[in-house]
Image 1 (tube, rainbow, N blue to C red):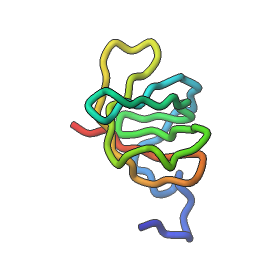
Image 2: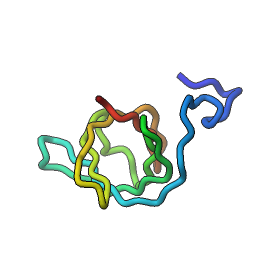
Image 3: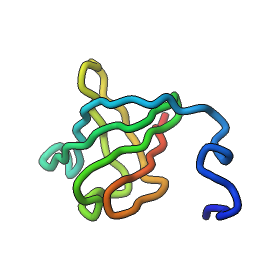
Image 4: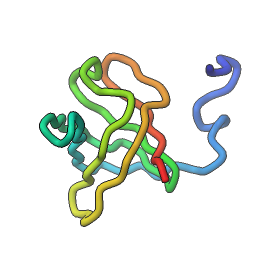
Length: 89
């Protein structure tokens, strides 16, 4: 899964920019939603912060505040308050 000898930054192929954007995760055919804050982001993924990650499914649609389009994403890692996601094509 992860190599404890390397930091997250060292394992990433692409640099993630620090951001502070609101986002909504939609799942369950659009009937369920959770609010999140994007902490850092690259073209391929992001780190999201929220109160509790236990209700976040493995895949969902993410709507970023100020963006017109939504993207599909999958969870790569999680802890109780944050998740790392990869954007899907």
